[in-house]
Image (cartoon, rainbow, N blue to C red; front, side, top):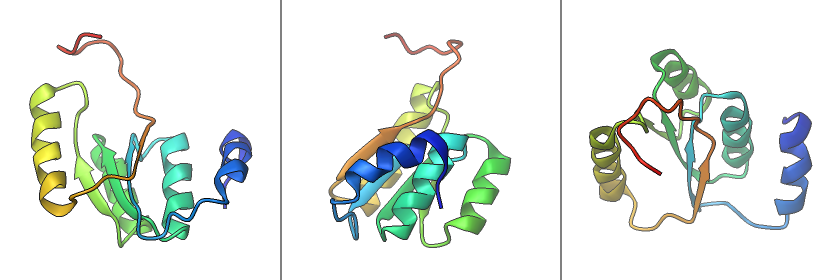
Length: 111
């Protein structure tokens, strides 16, 4: 199911029950994000997948049909705010956030 370094780390969290837990994964269409999405999907977590690439969004929708998938550019504050509003409407609690999205440094965000 998973490969490489991701499977190494996932061995240590197999004791935690993620079924029905709300898990956000940013950069879900990237290599690490996709592997983590697959892992938590098979653990029956409620996935909240965030990705900005439209081709990768389609792939995520096809692979993780029961997931909540959002198009969001994490380098644009307005995109983040709009996405968070949508997520808050559907989920009252977020149990886990995994940030795998990369930022290239061309944004208005500081920090």
